[in-house]
Amino acid sequence: MVGNKKWGFLQEISRQYCPEILEALHESPMRFTDLKRICKSQKTLTQRLCLLEECGAITQEMQKERKRRARLLYTLTPKGKLAIETVSAFKEEK
Image 1 (cartoon, helix red, strand yellow):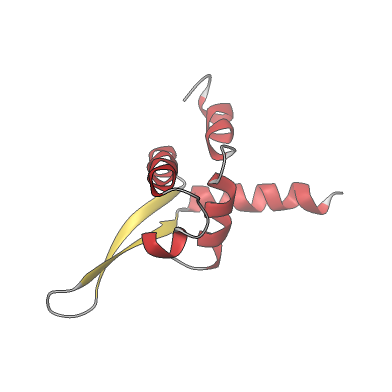
Image 2 (tube, rainbow, N blue to C red):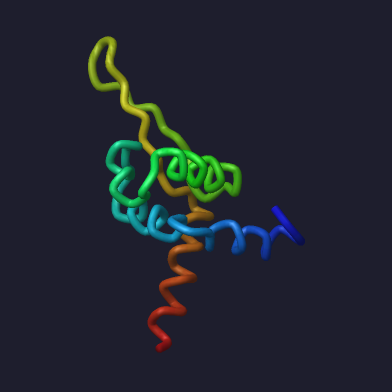
């Protein structure tokens, strides 16, 4: 991140596709394959998810379904929820 932490965080989450990913995760935790429809390329989606995880906006959560099967879900952290609420407050002021 560039600069100090608070402005660096805003700079990172404002990158292309990051707001859309955060809004999708605000509704419910999602799998990578579910998030694919947001990004045009799988590489970009992977980069954005790693970036958001490094910023502390999202986290990975392993959910076990059956004996040998598990799902990796991406979920918002409290910091990510706060970012969405802040951006939503700006949208409502128009």
